[in-house]
Amino acid sequence: MERTVPSTASDEIALYLRTIYSLLRTTAEFQIRTLEETHAATNSSLHLDARKSTPDTSAFIYSLLRLPDCMPDVRSVILGQSAVVFHQHGYLEIENWQQVSARARRRRCFFNRKDTLACYIASRSDLDDIIPSLVAYQIEWNKLHTLLQRWPASLTWRAVEKDPTAFQSLAELLEISVEDLERLRTIWGRSFSATLQRIAHKRCRIGVRLLSGSLADYRLATRAWWDNIERVCPELNDRPVYFISSNTHSLPNLLTGFALRHQAELQQFLDRKENGDLKAEWENITSGQVPSSQENFWYYMLKKYQQTSEGRHLISGQAAAETEAGIIRVPSEHYFDVEAQRVELKKLNPAWLDPRLNDEDYTWLAQSDALILNIDYPLGMGAYNLLVKIAEHAQPILGVYIMGKAATLNGRQGDVIIPNVVQDEHSENTYLFENCFKAGEVSPYLQFGTVLDNQKAVSVYGTFLQNARIMDVIYREGYTDIEMEAGPYLSAVYEMARPKRHPVNEIVNFYNLPFDLGILHYASDTPLGKGKNLGAGTLSYFGMDSTYAATTAILRRIFKHERARLKEANK
Image 1: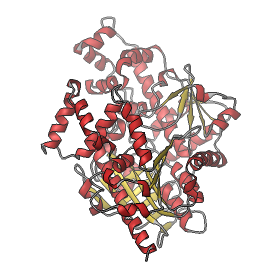
Image 2: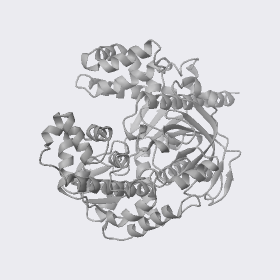
Image 3: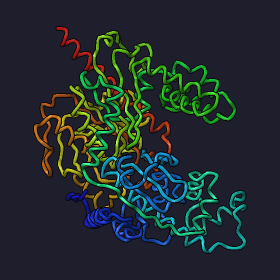
Image 4: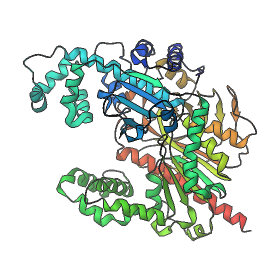
């Protein structure tokens, strides 16, 4: 569980990491307040105003969206790799607790409806993510608590809810902008006033306990995750596999075209009075005023419609269509939250494919014995653990394709970044590789952004573990793409292609890989955008554009590669 610190880390962040891991060694619960000073001293780019008495609303919102909504009740957070680990430490029935989730972070969590939150972790990267988020949350909660003690008798919560003038008075009391207070009201919704009253009533005091932190426990949890997939899809052991790390919605949408085949029903839903804003959006798209994919719009509308009572029947309908097209979903149970999908290429219906894919004769798919294994992208070092385990069992692997979110230092939100150099903070290696994707293979499907290839990426420990000094070093060295998974994935790729464990602190040049390798990142934020980014809320059309462009490029690459493989085999 010990954490080494790379040369790119500042002294303050190095101290922060050492402090975190020294506290996590204890078998007892430690208090988050122990970390507040070292957290503030890092001058994190996401928490620049940690030391100030005035709230850093962006940091608070960033942490709010990465922690479950039950946090106002939480006093203890317990972390473990699997149900077995929790059981061994006396937590016998945590999966009977209330399942809760964060809006901007996938992590399986359970709340005992009183004061304890249990979270599954897939790797030490989860610790690098959860702990700073808890510290930032507690610091900013307590700032608001102090300011709310000055509540004037003339101001009432009823007035705050109804009167814009009173709402502005509350913003002034909290020493934040009306815009930021509105952001909090959007996040908390109907519980806005109740949550602020709870903040006024008590200070935040959160304790954390790590039940187990050994590499063996992470490996056991990863093995259990794979066993579940293997039990459902045993054919992964003896058929060619294309591995994708992306998400669980874009791939099946593109491969089944289910929403496009139910466009008439979705149109009726769109025409309803309450969907006026969406109707205006659709009209802007069809008139050409907004450069957006019509297909992406209907994928978005399908999700909205399925959330209504009238549209629920399309949930089972979509599942049936996926099964008919050879797509099996394997949900994650009893461990970390990484769903998997298995796609059987020969069962795909060419007539159902998204128009961006269906521009040639795909009757040859019926001859393929290959599978696609797509997983919901993991966090940080979880990527290494999962791909190493997959490679132990799925043989042969014909391609490894990674799609994920990144921060960009030279682009804008919605851009697609294609790196061929990755500096990994975890292994301290610099990986040089031939990315199978070029800008021209993505740009035809991207409406809003720009495709930037031949870029340099850095895989970092966590989002809070960056500051201006690190950003300056990164940018001066020509690194413009900041994310968390590429480096760990490339460490696994090394072990898939070389006869030894990945090295440490070396320049690694990949050559003659026995499989296809491609990495695509879509820019979800800029570091200067402090909390106001795609990752801070629901994914908009702007985000969908780059996501679907990248997924389209990956699927087209797989089809091209598989067709060439079959042609060669039939010579």
